Image (tube, rainbow, N blue to C red; front, side, top):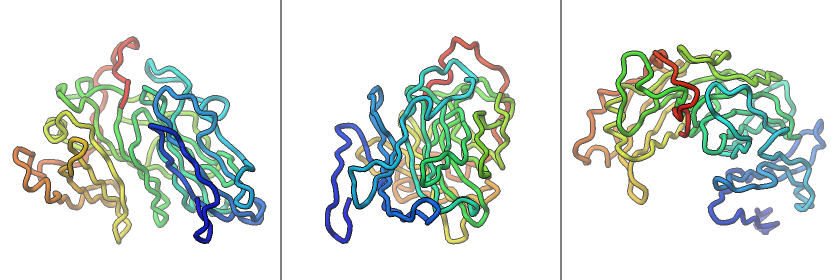
Length: 310
């Protein structure tokens, strides 16, 4: 971390760990009017960090203004809708944005995921460390983006409530057994939902603004192969959300499809990357679309592992 070109302090998160947030921000007068360092760390699975998110005094970096840990009481999962268990939540994403006009200063958007399971929580926090909004999703969230004009928070990742074979009219697929999804929520100041996002046939109770999945599953499966799907959100000039799915083995430039979606979650364009164009055997980009998540046809027994990551 540097100030005016001068290094203030260095942090080494350790092997296998990553710094996901490193920002200097000025807090408004209501919160002290000071300049603070925001730090967030993503730790490797099975590690036991003392702090994942914190604010430090810029003038005295050793002075911790507030900190958040990875277990209760800082994070408490609602009643699980499957066999998920545990209490260690990794910080996966942390971003700073102006969300609530009624709240002083900017806010911190965070995504925490239950270690080795699919429970994920989206939080919006104030610069004083207070939780201003919270909502839970069954499935890893890979990226999140704030659209200020629409007041929407867009998230993409996986739905892990059940496998494809347990959804209406769909067979099991080989490589990508869970739907790839994108959804929108409209955060409200002070709404702390220790509840799950509602999906068709699911057990969640909080309705999103919209919720879509990438279809058809067999085409997605042939595109992904044996690799993990990487979902990236970005904002175009008209503030529509674009979802960039980069797929391929590590160490190579993956073939990618860029789906441009409007703010209602409907696709308006799809374009393949240069790597995608020259790679043989990949599905025609025009066969993909974003549609409603098919309803759950049957819930698996609670002793199955169908909700393990992603």
